[in-house]
Amino acid sequence: MTLGRFAPSPTGVLHLGNLRTALASWLSARKAGGRWIVRMEDVDGPRCRRDLGEAQLRDLAALGLESDAPVLWQSDRSAVYRETLTALHRANRLYSCLCTRKDLQLLASAPHTEDGLRAYPGRCRGRAWEGFDRALRLRLSDGPLTWEDRLLGAQVDDPVALTGDPLLFRRDGCFAYHLAVVVDDGAQGVTEVVRGADLRSVTATQIRLQEALSLPRPTYAHLGMVAAPDGTRLGKRAGALGLEALAARGVSPAEALGWLGWSLGCLDRPEPCTASDLIGAFDWTKVPKDESRVPTAWT
Image 1 (cartoon, rainbow, N blue to C red):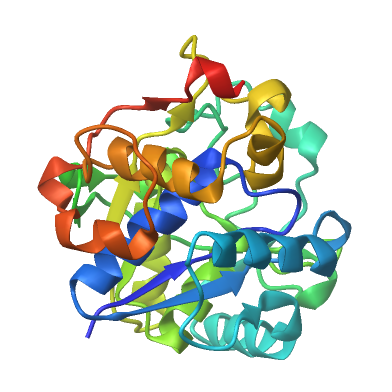
Image 2 (spheres, rainbow, N blue to C red):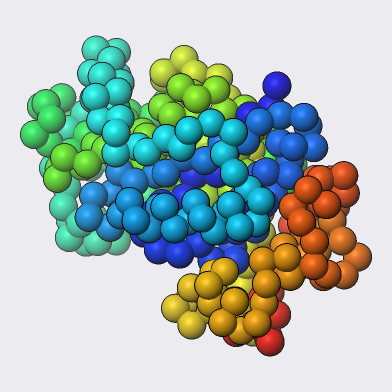
């Protein structure tokens, strides 16, 4: 059975790009007769707040998108992540990293990922495990990896070139995104991951971590981003355009759903609807691969 998930970080409001991803994930799972869950990725310390997560859940509910299982908060799972790191250490897959942010910024030869981030160049790869007092990285398997994207088709990536050895544990004691997302997708039985195209470049790295942990590989679909009316990436001006901001502009949740459904190829034109109205029309072959632009009247 298909099990889809939506996993936001509770650091602010869900903007239209987030809501579009959530809707696509929900529709894909529902169309397949499967289940859909929400997980709060709140491992990033002070930036993540429970009240913001609760507000995000209310916005999802306002669109008719409610989790089929209790919401999992990653901040409650530190013991699980620590046990996973210990197992990876025993398998000789981890090493301690002493690099600071400044060190990495100075490594001008480090390659960049598709979204402009620097790949880790392996400066500390020869070091041994030095316990949880240091940052910890996964020693990636070398070579290209082939994986399938439901929207983009066959993909071939070299994760070492794209991201370098990923950070799994930070020196401030926080468990890193790659570790938490892979462990929890496996623990929750997630079979389908729908997310934005800005995360496409980390997929091969996460698959390598799944392999290291003997976890099954879910299917992936990376949606085109939602942009401002002029085509620029959503920033503070339009980036915070969530349901509350839309309501202040006279846009109801039903109208927002109509635009989101239209942008996913479910409707011929934007018109008020419910999420359930869109299930029958959802088809991955009709979902646009390019970006979607927010209506000018909404910004």
